[in-house]
Amino acid sequence: VHIKTIPTLNAGELSFFEGTRDIPFEIKRIYFISKVPEGVRRGFHAHKKLKQLLFCPYGCIQLILENQRGREEIELSDPSVGVLIEEPTWREMLWMKKDSVLCVAASDFYTTEDYIRDYEEFQRFLKDKV
Ligand code: T46
Image (cartoon, rainbow, N blue to C red; front, side, top):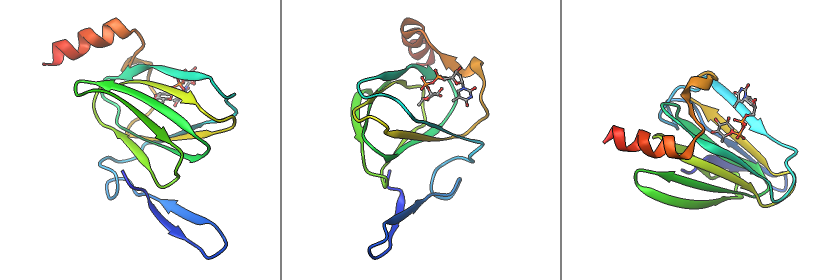
């Protein structure tokens, strides 16, 4: 999705989004991942209910996403681009550049119960949903 972005002459740009207005959920939690060396992968899990908007305000991060609609690879390097995840989706994040920052706006508080950290369990979860 496009994140509204306003340029200022010779002084960079400002991006913003508002919960329920620009993204289809109320934001209950913001987190960000930083200081990750180049070439490192994180993630390797899915969420049962959580909805999230992922964006990269600095650097370059590849997302590998897999859900009922298939597998997708997205390179996040533009602060005005966000990726909305609204359904159970297996995710991996690959740091293409050192010090890239991944920011996430989430629809709910942190709870370990919402995570599926086993890939085969995720496959079974998708099958049971159909
Ligand atoms: C996701 C991807 C994109 C908390 O205590 N509170 C929090 O809100 C979060 C997000 C994490 N944690 C703890 C749990 C672990 O002990 O922080 C530690 C690292 O979390 P994790 O290994 O799950 O980090 P990633 O980068 O694999 O995944 C994270 C999010 O957890 C996940 O929801 O979608 O980023």
